[in-house]
Length: 581
Image (cartoon, rainbow, N blue to C red; front, side):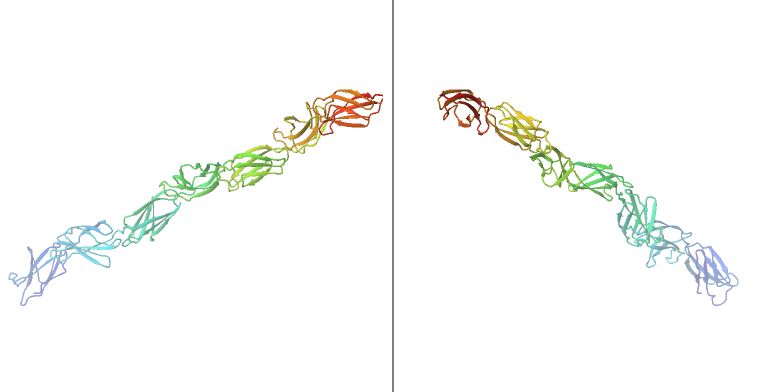
């Protein structure tokens, strides 16, 4: 009566029962083809097969050890053995693949239970492996595997294994770059994670934050950063997200402008510390690339201020370091068509055409003086008469220092006027001119009269081959050493002496008169003066009747040709004659 099975293990069963009414001597237990006897109301059956089904029949036996009552039986399964060598072979963010060895003995199927300490799920399988899906990334799961007997209820001992699913990948990985550091930022992954591992080159760094600054990098170098989300076991990692980048190249050093022309600027600089692929040179709206540490920039406009910015660029052709800029004016162009238009003894007026391109103002230099002007003309004063000056005109840019090429012109100031011009030794055919040299400098003198010019280096000159009795105007100019530039003239007007008359004769003589006649002198005359004793008569004729004389007296008559100025007289020709008695 009341046959029960207790303490069912993988290899044994403890049977218990209640003794029957009446008498009995002992008990026989029959299972499979075995028999065991006991005088007790319980018995432990060992050496059973795990997970196997057994039917135990218990008989009460009389004291003759032969006579038996009707049996009471019980059917049961021993517990299956525990599985062996459970392993996790494939772990993803959402699944875990488990495999194990068959337990010793029998089993019908396996029960798999897993929990994340919040929820618990169960699956059954007849295989020795199972792919568990629909998990949460980065979570620690405890998996419990139990072999179940064919009665679908008798379970063996459980084997437990804990495993984190892989964390999900991080999201939105970005980088802020400097020449020696990179600041990485990302968004935490879906699911759970404990911290992050950043891998680059042969280095690893970890952080619990969603950002990290990596220092001590080489400027202009390429780096690949891989960021893994790591589970709380510090072992299980999700798939990495990586970013490849170049650190910014360092700034260049010691940029210099070494050659400046009207159309070009030559730049040179030192290599930046670290790596670089090439340099970008930018100005206005133009960009040039070069792998050298110098560059000649051409096709510029004269006299313009340019700002040149030089940037080192990494090998990805896009990552640029900080720019170093330098400003420089191109040289203004040379002026055009420089001319001297007004020259005096003390000043020179210069004018010129604007240079091509830009300029701010002009420098006008001569001897040890400099003037500036914004005009294309300039009157230079306070010069010395008769001096050769070389004037240099230079266009200057708006920085007040960058100058274009100089265009020069040489010019003598006009000499000053001569002084104290006199005419001496006036004869019928010549004049001696004398003067005092002018203040300051002169090289020689030009004497102009009628359509003739004569020059001399002296302060006197004799002019010959003149016409007697003729009026002449002599202009005397001081001439500079260029034999071209002349000062203002001083002039003198005069008449040469008329020539002497010819063939003076007495044609009629009376007691009171004498008639004279003569031939015209060679050259010019205006009238004649007839002089005798203390009397003078003027006539324009070549004869004259002199009256009111005294009879029997000897008279000397002198005839002189007079020029048109009424004062310049030629030499006199005289004749003596007695009046009649």
